[in-house]
Amino acid sequence: MAQSDDTDNQQSADAEVKPARKTARPKRSKRIKRKVVSKPKKPEQSEDSRLRPAAAIVPPQSVAGRALTLVVAIMSFLACLTVGGVSIVWDAADAWQNDLVREITIQIRPTEGVDMLREIDKAVALAQEFPGIGSVRAMSDAETKALLEPWLGEGLQLDGLPVPRLIQITVADPDQLNLEQLSSAVSQNVVGASLDDHSVWTSRLSAMAGAVVAGGFAIMILVLGSMVLSVVFATQSAMAGNKDVVSVLHFVGAEDSFIAREFQRHFLLLGLKGGISGGVAAIMSFLLLDMLTRQGSGQASSDQLSALVGSVSVSLPGYFGVFGVVFLVAILTALTSGLAVKAHLAKVD
Amino acid sequence: MIRFENVGLRYGMGPEILQDLTFQIEPQSFQFLTGPSGAGKTSLIRLLFMSLRPTRGLIKVFDRDLSVIDKQELPRLRRKIGVVFQDFRLLDHLTTYENVALPLRVIGKDESEYRSDVIDLLKWVGLGDRMHALPPVLSGGEKQRAAIARALITRPEVLLADEPTGNVDPPLARRLLRLFIELNKLGTSVIIATHDIALLEQVDARRMVLADGRLSIFD
Image (tube, rainbow over all chains, first blue to last red; front, top):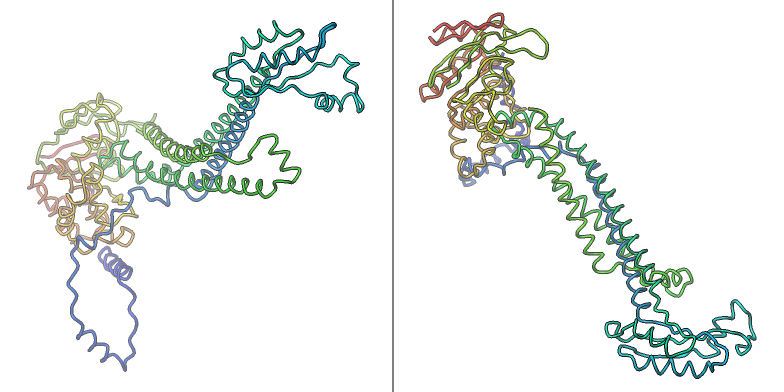
């Protein structure tokens, strides 16, 4: 019986290896035969040259399907979006901070018996002497009125009201300017004057930017954490599906690290595929956002957004961040699967 | 080479299926392990191959005590032992050539180093023209020979074969037996687990008979 099985299988194997032969018509059979005879005989291929490149020991199709690649791609996309969002907010906060640091204000409150205009001139002259100061400009009556108009209405007479006056100072070089000295000089030499360096705003802005960045990192860690868990489950399922392969590898003397590497290789490829797909999708989203913002400039909604966060486009560090996420996703996927395989093997023996 | 002293084995809380086994496998020896079905031949083969640990007794493999051996050391010891399983355990997605080359790939050898050795061995076991075929299209006898070739490719010091003739017809069984004898002459200790009486009668070799969990040895 076994012998007959042997022969049957031999035939089926031959049928699989050899290409299907066409049935020649009886009329043309002679001509075909002549043709075959006249052809020069090809040299026989050596056994070595007929060997296919060594197949993967763990079959790739048994490791993880498209579903896991899609999960990794979605997670990378979300992580890249977070990186992009953080980059936009960080750039905006940086721009705000720079603007505020480069502008300080002297406020002069009216005091009885003191000539306000003289005090303003004194303050302007004092400020101009300080190193690092760019320009000093006292706000005109009209500008002060315009500032107060929303609260006090039109036709305001400044002379009759104790309205403080403002002097705008633009800082040319923040490193050269000694704010403490300027502040004490202003309060000592000008009656009723005080210096406002917007430090309250800058500290709040940096706190807000810090919170956004921390939040972004937290979201990214959560997203990558979920991805790692998905990979752990997928690895365990792949190990269960390849129980026979693992058992064979064990009895031919494979070390756990070798088996882990065989699985890891597939997961690294899967992580790269998923990570690159997610990264490319995120980059395309950034470019689309940039394009839409440019197209919409001049419209109210777009201008409001631009006023708030400045340019709504991801800067170069943001794109580097995306590459970093793709790399991190691939490495994390491979490392996680390798550790999961080793943990599984440790439990098996 | 391999030494068992008062070895006992039980699965979980069940009865002891192997009791007080004491024997030694000498270098370049040839023995049959026989007994009725369910006598524990496969369990003993698994103990010999270190894929099971005994519940009591001492097993020494290549002078290493199995009870104190580190898990990391097992693969290196297993490489000195070739195993042919009753169900072959060939990987269906690898060709015959790749299956046979697997133990060499596992130890990190480059294909160019072992290609000719694998091809020669495949020709020796009569599979020279089947090296590109996948196991699902091989016959029982061909799979058996591929499994034997895989067990031999690293030139092991011991060969364990569990029912190697269980799936083949008598002429092929005789041919495989001749192959084992030839291998033994080349220096490998051979242990063949079988309940095929016809096979036992063909060779005058040591017989280890398992019955009711106990081992009797007839030299």
